[in-house]
Amino acid sequence: MARHAMLIEDEPNIAEAIRFLLHRDGWQVSVLGEGGSAEARVREARPDLVILDLMLPGRSGLEILQGLRADPLTQSLPVMMLTAKGQGRDRAAAEQAGADLFMAKPFSNAEFVAAARSLIPV
View 1: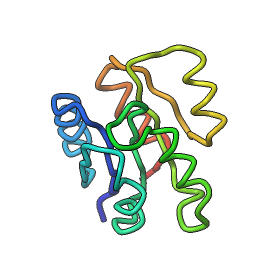
View 2 (view 1 turned 90 degrees about the vertical axis):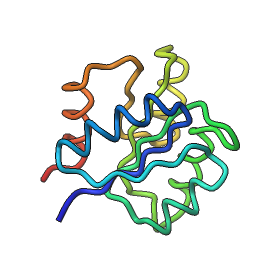
View 3 (view 1 turned 120 degrees about the vertical axis):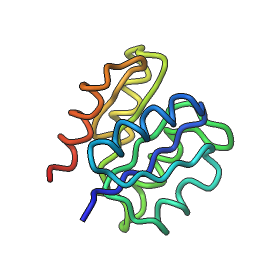
């Protein structure tokens, strides 16, 4: 059965690139372009991995991550945080909120797929 990633990313070009990379690697990918309904959608879809942009319309990636970590249903779900700002402050906040992995944009395709695989081994 294919691994399922839910990608929460508001930039269509980035979302499509990530969807393509993971799909080519055998993943099923759901894409959500805003943060407002993200937690509810994650609970419904029950993905193996959440890939979460830090800056989103509706609700920030950090707020979503904190909500997921506070819920027993999703608290151990692997989460990879994405951000265009690779600043240490963002990384520290994401790690403190419970991100499993932090990836700064831009990233190499191989690096991204390897990171996703590291969180959900086949």
